[in-house]
Image (cartoon, rainbow, N blue to C red):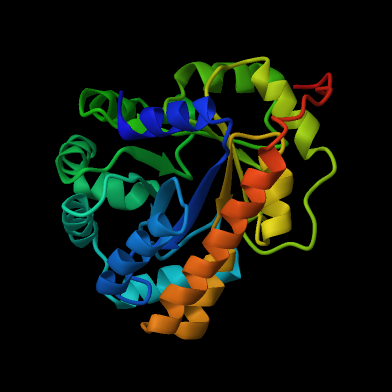
Length: 280
């Protein structure tokens, strides 16, 4: 049982939802990223997604694009990010997922990347622009090295394809709440809850929801029916505002703590059972 599976198993026993913050490695510095991960864990984060900076982030909205640019300027290469994970492992056992795009992985070499990531202490990979049907080159070494290859599903994913994807998935499923890019949004789609309920008919894997969750109230709403809320742009904006300062740690930690508290309260009565739609 790796850290991701162990974390979700423990949370399920406690009837507790997972908070999964996303921050970009190297934003604004690699040293600050290390401190941010530890602060997020201390404030209630259950898993952390570390963004791997990339020059053409097609799935990311403006806030995360700027964060990725700051990471690139800070020199956050794959080698340096894996070294960061290895340093974190001497101080923390929180589950860590590398979130990024396929080009840096392909350039590094899939087998070498997985071997080095596994040795460093990475637990999972989420490659946004790699369709599950074309992921065999990465899936095989990932499994051999004990890494969960996490897949995305979206509101536009047809039912038959969703069924195929869940059979290939490991760790948890990442459901994209909107047909668009990451970013802060005023409200979540009304059909989100029944679509997550539909996914539950297909798999026993935990289901996390991301893209657009930016406030404690939104995180709580998702926690009432999903296993995890993934939050990125809201943290990227705080880091952008405060930079490499103690204020950044406090602001990011405070938001994480508020979100986790709201999520626990929302789940106190157990997850709701929504009526799933017919088209998933």
